[in-house]
Amino acid sequence: MTRGRTTIGVLIGDGASILEVAVAPRVFEIDHGPRGGPTFELLTAGERPGPLATTGGIALHAPHPLAALDRAGVVIVPGWRRPGGPPVAAPVLASLRRAYEEGATVVGLCLGAFVLAEAGLLDGRRATTHWVCLPEFAARFPRVDVVHDALFVDEGPVITSAGSAAGLDACLHLLRREHGPAVANATARALVVAPQRAGGQAQFVEQPVPPMADDDPITTAMRYALEHLDDTGLDIDRLAAAARLSRRSFDRRFRETAGSSPLQWLLHQRVLRAQHVLSTTDLPMNAVARASGFTDGVAMRPHFRRMVGVPPQSYRDSFRTPEPHTP
Image (cartoon, rainbow, N blue to C red):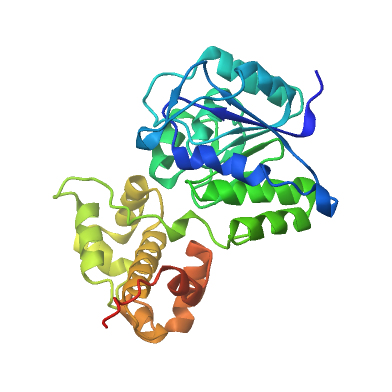
């Protein structure tokens, strides 16, 4: 059976997120034929016959059986049920492996990446998923090269995306890659979204605090750092002193505990503080920098852009909570 390049298969799993289920059908239902572009055939299939539960108490009936995906040149797995639920059925995994082996592009949106990994399609490849589940994803699938700060990851025949809205980014990227920027841009205009967002998941990740015993010296140093984060003189020697360890022992134990160097962690905490200040205040950029432990906005900017993916002002424009209007 020939897999059509413009035949899009969408696989719905029982318990999926209704928002993520809707992403691919909405993107690929747009007819670009009148402008000389592609017209897509959409095959939405269920992991099993019968009604499928989704979030919000909404049940769906997929119009096609699982076997319909054997015609698809692109197979998209929207956000699946939360990890730890029932195992993915063997016929579903076989269908995805068959699609990959027959040259289809296989896409996992959000938690759909777990399904692709379970099928073995991500072994030895880079991939991402929703930032909340990245630690579990990495633990369950050690052969996957997990990318922690990306809206989507393109590995050629396999694409994975971060959380809900990043599924739109991945689908628009696929349109751009396969059918050109004009098609992707026309779709983005129809959906009233940006054709290509800057930055990665670091814009949205909450502050990580490793769970450790209160009397652990690394916990003590981290707590000290967070309490003195606006002190531009705070350095690694002071953190080592707070932990009552030599600089060498502190560096080694910190890396074992946090998975990064003390300096990398400290810079990350300062950028996280800057994100919070940017989104909750109207302070000038130099004041934001000083509140986060940087000497000024110029010193803050390269670290912020490297970790978050966008400049500080762009982040503020996207995330600043407006003051309530008073009549």
